[in-house]
Length: 396
Image (spheres, rainbow, N blue to C red):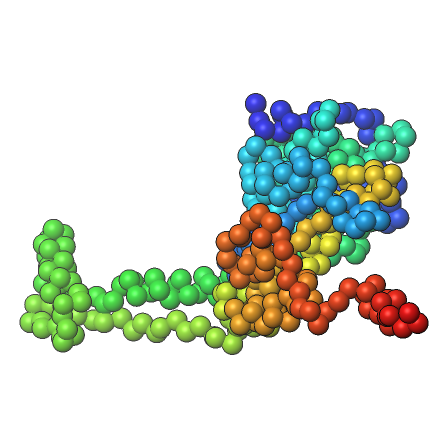
């Protein structure tokens, strides 16, 4: 029995295609034109997924008193182990990879009697939107093992990229396929050039008739004597019995400008740079990547998870799912020290929060929870009282 056979409670509504504005039947297939098979495309997607998977998912409740921690079990699923088969990092990595590889990414919310039981990213071969007679929307998922499951759309995390021409699905990656094919052709050319070095170098022409076995022996002897790395002089000596006719081999040349252009096109399409892929980015480049790629992704996931996990009434009560990261991870040690010097006097960090920014172990206990603050910064209420003369002894 497969994993999905155990977790899905299959429901079979009377199926009709949902009414959408475009007048077409929404059907998803993970088409990428083999874009993900390209090493350039895959490396770029991997770089984004690795950074995005470091986001920390959590359930919080916003109240009049501020932000409060949410349900412990839900926080465990979001931040540690969403299901028995993968870590939170693995689950996010898979969701984000599908998001960029196919422009649609699906996850299943398994609900139990006590609330959310597990969260699963789905790897499907197809998905079809259907509705029942009450216009409740479902998705029929098709899996690689041939199984089909119909699940309520309200239980599906659905992330969409290039959400433009379809009412329910993101566009496919056909726009980038020419650049992907060019990059793959160049990669194949490089491999062909490497293999060319092991191809036929020349022809041994004997001036007399030899038996096949004798011909093979003479060939092997000539190769061992003159066509190996130990023949440093590169000189072959022959007699009147044979002639060595070298073949003219022209080295395969790669157009470096074309290689760079093809890679840049793919990186631009994914909103990333070569330096992020190679992990050679500067502090400013890392921060720009975080703000332009990771933060929008975190916002999209937070909104979708919140909408699907909580009812409208629960959302109105302040329940939210957040995916948070730390742009300071891209900052240099000097920048981190400078930030702490400027922030700690205002009581913005506890001792342990400051130590975490510096990748130091927490102290723990009450000492770790202390907030340090300069005497030059006072509580606003006290400042107002002082200005209004609330602490003045005048008139006594």
